[in-house]
Image (cartoon, rainbow, N blue to C red; front, side):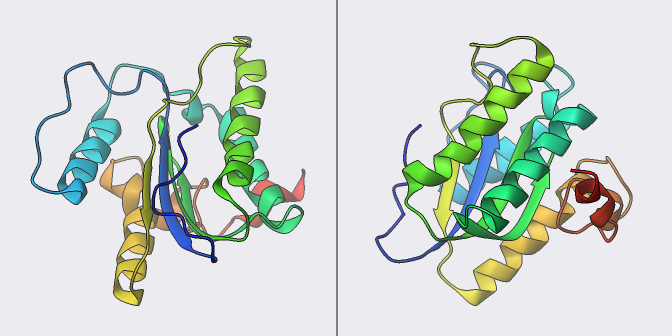
Length: 181
């Protein structure tokens, strides 16, 4: 896994997006003036995708993602989850880091291994090599990112209200997801 270039030796808040291998059609990347414009277009393509893998839309896999994130926050203390959402073909995280990127990458690896077991496709790529990573620099940017993450399911047309998506920090009914773990 490529390490976030913006990560510093002190604790940081990082906005991360991990997408599934094969989730973006070849040649769909255009030229954009800013990295923010490129990210917004990538997220639009992911949210509108009708083809390609949608494995994170599988309830068992989405649940595994949430459980892995919560475990690595509460038990392993790798990071503090500020905001998160698991979409059918990607996920967004805003985390306050407590560990180096290589340690945090273990979360991604664990999710991939467990998801591939569920899908009976062990040894095959699950996540795309490239990820989006950005260090959050201001409180205003932090608030925008939280809103962006939590509104993604509504923006994609999966739910009417962000809090209706069960695989998100916006969900009010989160406890049922973790209670039976």
